[in-house]
Image 1 (cartoon, helix red, strand yellow):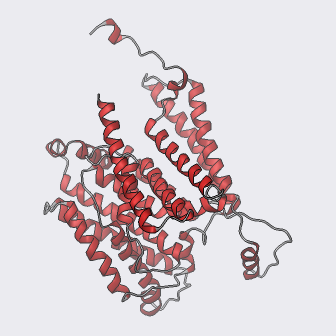
Image 2 (cartoon, rainbow, N blue to C red):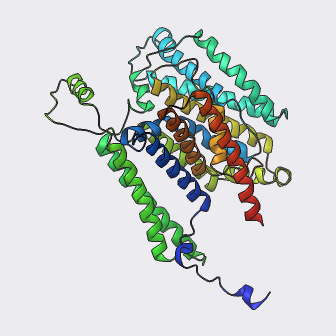
Image 3 (cartoon, one colour):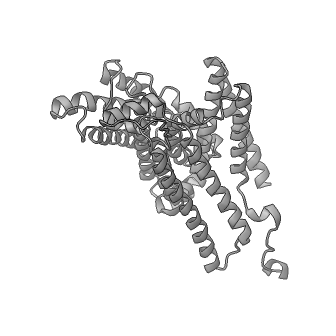
Length: 428
C-alpha cells in the first residue's frame, strides 16, 4: 500500500459536500417538470391545493403496494396479481361489513367494531394469498411470472363471485376515514404531524452524524448537514401548508356543525389537512424502510437479490424468505384495498384494474433494478407519484384513456432504458 492510499480522504467542497443522491434528485426533478408542464397546459389548474390534495390520495393505494413490490423485484421475482389480490381483499372486507358483521354476528353497519373486523379479515386474506403464492414459487419452484399471472386471473374472478358481480356499499363510516377526503387530520393535527416529522428529520441527521463520528467515519461539513435538514423540513412544512390550503366547502362544513347540533360561526374557514390515507402511506414507508435497512430480514432480501446462489450457500433459507416476501406484499395489497375502497365508499368490480402495471412501473421508475439486488422504498413512492401525476395531468388536459396508457407504457420502457444506461456508467 502506498502513502497516498493510507492518507485520509480529502473533504468534499461546494455542492459535492452535500452528498446528494443523484437518482433521487432526478426523480424529484422529473416530477417538478411534469407538474409545471401540466400546470401550463391546463391553464393553471394542476399546481393547486385541490388538485395536489386529490393527487396524494390517488397515489396512496399504488404507492403502498409499490413498497412491497420493491422487495419482490429485488429478489428477482415479479408479481402480476397485485390488482386482483387487492380486489379480493376489498370484496372480503365489503362482504364482512354488509353481510358477516350485521347478519352473522348481529352487529350493525355503524357498530364501532365493524370496520376493524373487516380490516382484520382483509389483511388475513391478503397474507394467506401472498403466502400461497410464495409457497408455489419458493417450494414448488414455479416461476413467479406464471404463478402471479394465474393469480391475476383467479383472484379477480374470486372477487366477482364473492359479490355476485355487484357493487357493495355504502361501507362503514369508520372504514371510510381511510379513503382520503372523508378522513383527514384537519389543520391543527396536520401541523402537529408536520412538527413531529421535522423533529424526526433533525434527530435522524444528528444521530447519523454522531454515529459516524463515533466510528471515525468522515462526516459532512456542518453547513451541509444544516442545508439538507433545512431543505427536508421546508419540504415537509410546505406540503402541510399546501394541504391545509385546500378548504372545506362551506356547505359541507355547515352540515358537520349541524350533525353535532352546533351552529357554524359566520365566515368560518377550515382546511382539510393531511389525509389519513397519506398518514397510512407514511407509516408503511417508515416500517418498510426500517425492514430494508435495519433488520436481518431486509439484509437477507438484498443479499438474495444480489446473488441467490451465494445467499443460499451462506445459510439463508431462500424458499422460506420467498414465502415471507410475498405474504408481506399480500398484506400491503390488503392495506391498499382499504384505502382504495374507502376512497370510493364502496367495492366495485373494476377496483384495482391495471394496478399491476402502475405498481411495477412505480418500483422500476423509482430505481428498483429488474435484475435484482437494488431498490429503495422512497424511490418507489416517488415513482408512484410520477405515474399518478402523468395520468392525472393527461386526464386534466383531455387526453383519451387509450393514449394515456400508451404514454404510461412508453414511460415505463424509457425508465428501464435510463436505468440500464445509468448503471453501466456507474459501473464504468
